Image 1: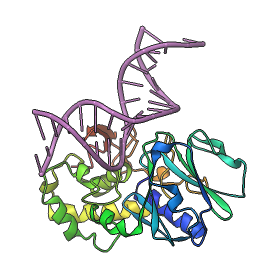
Image 2: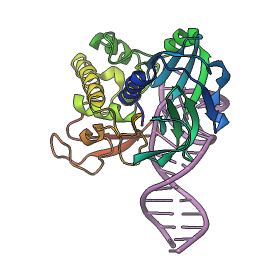
Image 3: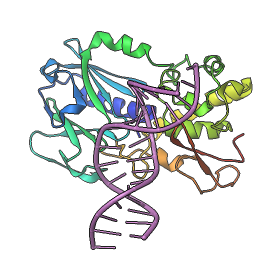
Length: 283
DNA sequence: CTGCGGTCCTGAAGGC
DNA sequence: TGCCTTCAGGACCGCA
């Protein structure tokens, strides 16, 4: 699922291709996923692409911004050439070899390319806002974990205020921005901390380890261009999968052996979500 | 403040 | 073979 490393990978890929391009038209194929008026951005030029938490923003030169949230199964795929269907050399997960597909809910036409928004589950959304709203949107979200602000002290401040399970604090977008189930599970493994531990019960040393572990796994996710696990829909705008799934430590590895100690990896539910951990390494 | 359950949605997987 | 139920999950919402 698209978390910080996946959305950031998409952002970087799109930035290379779309900066300076003019949006000539928008086809909305499933109206409920699109909020606002697409006409407000048609004819405008892309001047910047940013990410905050798991939200992607495309700024236009007319003071408007397109916001994308991919939620669980959203995809942004960029194809070159005008008109007609685009055929890919490998199938796009849940979309197939050709776009637009049944899961394609919006198409953005640029000078020499088309951007397809696909979403199997239809949880994702697109919104047109005034670019000035960026600050207000950003204020509702927590610290960016790959920024210099995410220090051990900053994490200490966050965890000291709640006794909720540490796993839920990691995925709380109002506390730390951009972490989802994959990287929360792997970061807790890397830090040797049990996901069920009350946040305020962590020692200063554990908080430091957790901070470093979060940064480590997110950077590793970025290095491999994100995670494209089985049954997951994430692909880069080129249609290529990411590679981090080959390096999962515990995520989706229930019943398999812990890469550190060889114990059998367990799965529990925390906050209604699957949580994977090594019962021996994580205390 | 916190937890809990429901909501959106589709496809995979399991039961019989 | 095929129908039916269950499950997965990011963010949000209402309720206790």
